[in-house]
Image 1 (tube, rainbow, N blue to C red):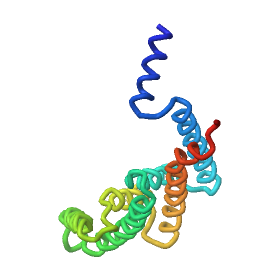
Image 2 (cartoon, helix red, strand yellow; image 1 turned 30 degrees about the vertical axis):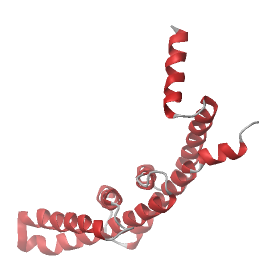
Image 3 (cartoon, rainbow, N blue to C red; image 1 turned 90 degrees about the horizontal axis):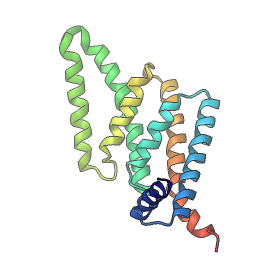
Image 4 (cartoon, rainbow, N blue to C red; image 1 turned 180 degrees about the horizontal axis):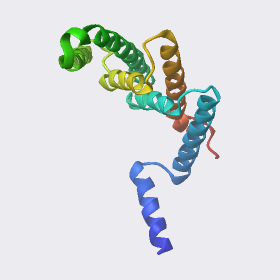
Length: 176
């Protein structure tokens, strides 16, 4: 049974197209980066989940630093769109009643979808992750909210960027 488990694990790594040692090094390195990012985030009294939103957003760039950075820029815009949406919602709710929320969400979705026409700022997940981070935070649309959300998201994105280069670091420093 133990030999069978070992063979299955070896096949999985082979399927990824890399030696077991390289895979193990990358896994441990990413784990260390995530652990350090969590300590820094919590140490700065920021929300841990928001750090992971930034990490996820950067990850939508598929390992490309420029696309990850562009996705992060879209997250920033998404947070700002969410803040603006809350202000607009408060302003039109008295007149629009129950239709205020669907109207504002419709406008947000249209704006985000139109971003497909504006590369490199065309990361739809980035925009929605930014809006999600703002709405889920429960904060009011003010500078403090922007700084709080983006600080944690930037820690996550930086960590994802470091994790992205982990394979290259292994290749450079691997034992002979």
